[in-house]
Length: 249
Image (cartoon, rainbow, N blue to C red; front, side):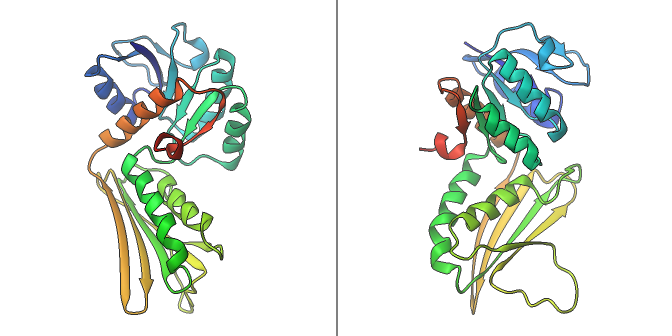
């Protein structure tokens, strides 16, 4: 039985994780961290520093502003941590990189296995298409999502740029009457509404032909399952920075 601490345990994803772990015989939540104090089947604390229970790893689905403090507390407690919170600043990512010299850290802007397989596909086809096709990304999410564009849209864009001979400039939405829309631009467009869990479409548009890759999240369960797989992977790792590409090897 592996012990888990949930950071952000009463958020949407924290509750989804609770539901998934309840039906597992190999996992148990021993403590939760959340500023919102509610009743639960396990002790709730304001910060990880207050947690008394021992755990095998931490899973974080919280707010980007709380991640730097969480990292420091994981270092102090020598706890591996899966960080699934999106919208992280470059300073926070740098802090994660530094902390990974001391503890194992797993970070992904999207915990879906499908999205990460999609990334591998995009990286295979982009070199053959980049000279002749405009590449655009459209992402859709529920109306409660605060950050735009989504971390996943940026993850997809970065994965394309990583294998492009000519790096593309990101254009966040388009407006104006004199846009030239050159090949070396990549438009990233955000849609917000209703209860859409998450939808990402990558469009390769050439002369007289269009290729589209689309991933639709039908529920948040896929992200919970991915985070749990990440935690199970991380518990046996030495200090370092890990991602879905390591998990899928």
